[in-house]
Length: 209
Image: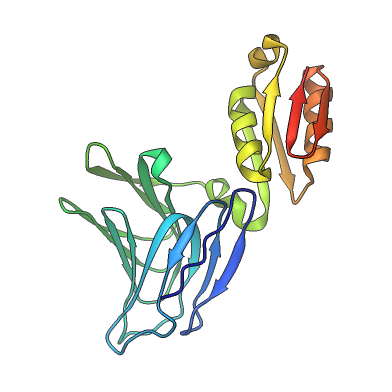
């Protein structure tokens, strides 16, 4: 079995033996065989990944993510299954996707998603916005976020530790901005200007003051 594990602040694209392309987000782990068998194609995911599955009507593609099993023939979709989030989300971009838990089963079409609560064991279906999977294109979106949410995202995406010396910074809210493939420095310059605070960087340590 092959088990690529992506560290915090990293992303990676993996191509499987059948030609399927998988984009792995930060802090994700994928388990898959070097070569698939004759009956099916099975992988395991912990974290988040976007799948562009090569069509093979004789061998369904199966993704196991905790208590959720996602089955497709050939389609593109996103799965977010970070343990810390206490939920699993499957969002379909193209094709038809089947999602099953022990209690429920759903068929999803493009623009739909299933969210599964790992604590209560319940799932529900809803529509989703493509902005939810903007990470695939290297896009970071703050849509009315407060500073606590922004700090959490930046620490995770850029593998840094951010300390805040002025508590008033936490009261800065309602940032609405979009970045595509921008460096941490550019984002911090913009945020500090908009929020009227200063920052410093020392290796992987960032200080807001």
